Length: 245
Length: 245
Image (cartoon, rainbow over all chains, first blue to last red; front, side, top):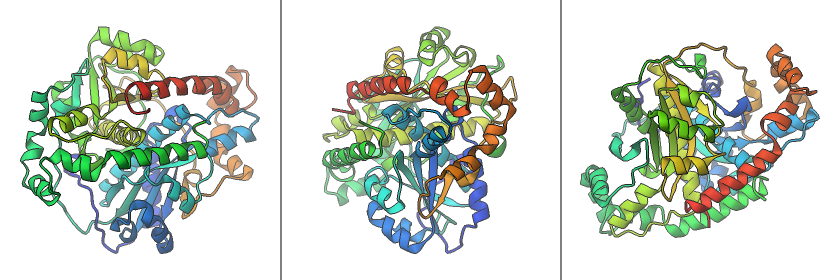
């Protein structure tokens, strides 16, 4: 395992992933810490081509969904735990936002441990940030019941590419000693100088007809309108699935 | 790294963690996937004893906070990214719930990768699930500004104990093939049989004067009243920090 040298893999060979390997990696992922050892998470494994087709629009037809041998949808899940309570004369109290957030934290730790284990076994993974945008469509396609919400999707396969590693901000931007230090305009210049100096970022600005890299994010990639629209969708999903009243 | 054999460590030796090691581990953690490479997360490092004292009540005075050489509070953070946008003539649009959830997913993947890296370096970690309960108090103590919300706290140190590994549910309970399968009462019996058979769980039921293990969770550990109270606190925090209107 070399965390420093990892990269996201978006192209995969045709080599299948065996059930045995997938299960071994899931066993490792289950060893991640979780709240009260309740394991309030689930993962839906998609191998079937028709199911990949059905999921594809929810992920804005990103090609990894159809191309990867395995697609994994990781879900916050209080359905199973609640059923256990009901079967054991206990009154469950998990239809609320705090329970959702706890389960969301636990499922991401589970998914990320799976990702680390998969990479250590020679596989490549890609996170799809589209899961929380179109959670309503994914719930329909995967038949997710009440108290189950999809949070994270990973495509998994043997790597057919070895892309460059993307840049990262300097640690100074991320780490705070004892108290949070709010960035001054001078700090911002220093934190973003390297990113803004990269030729591919300059190309990105030119291709999108923008003046600054930040404008590519605000006007094209992660716009206020889209964020507000998908916030409404997600809050509706939380209400329908029973986590918000 | 042996993910299968890891366990949570709650007792630490007096050996300090050097800044160099902490930075190396954070560099590795930053290599985790994140949405659009925006890195919308921060971590506040607490080493100062007075600050540990100040944080302690927010974590219900769990002894790890005072005892660990380092306490790490991982936060969803759109403050820095928003400042970058403002400094670069771009109009940020991140004061919404979808942006919060995206940042929350990314900070947990960051924190969990830190945990894996720390354990591979011989350290032990403990997750504190109290962070989202008392986020308001933590925000005050660590002076977290608008668009910054604490999600996950880790205590870190060199292990002074080697506890037994806790049980985990069988993979059948967690993994779903193609579609989610809702657990039947027979499934529930099978998934929870091993957990319920453990002597320490039987002791847990007796100590709490309950009839079933599930009742220990619903009536003592994770009660409806507490969950509903802390849901309100957390939704208020999201509103105050600018992620909910």
